[in-house]
Image 1 (cartoon, rainbow, N blue to C red):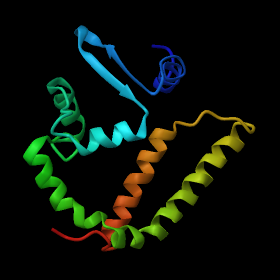
Image 2: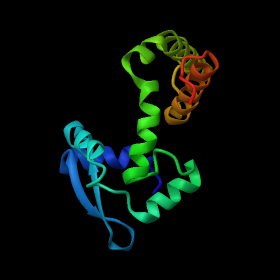
Image 3: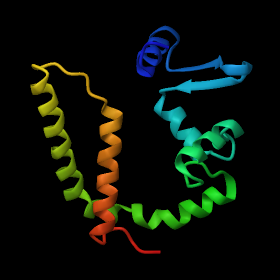
Amino acid sequence: MENENSVLHEKWVSVYGHTLKYKALFGMNRLFTVDTKALNHIVMNSHIYRKPEPARYALSQLLGDGVLVAEGEKHRQQRKIMNPAFGAPQIRELTEVFIEKAIELRDVWDSQITTEGGVARIDALSWLSRTTLDVIGLAGKGGILPER
């Protein structure tokens, strides 16, 4: 519990391989994988791999009842509405925004590393989340994302 999740997960991968099943809290089975083919299969077959109800509830409290939490027909409807915003032409229009925000993130991290004397621990997930929100905000403000 003292280590970051990635330390534990990296150890699992080195000891057990890219995919494993383990018992979690209350004896519930959990699947852990870093295999990209397996992850693709899971994501593309959400009707088979449903989130457990306690996980869905916790996610909904944190993220709302959106596409990341929804299952089945509700998820399909939300994806159908969102898909036009994520086609190749729309993503191409965001290239400059992605580059601008990536450079900005690089500069922030470089500044933190410099401030710490050349070595720093950076909460990459937090910074990547902020950058993602910045990109979404700029894309919406710039009229790149279609209106509903």
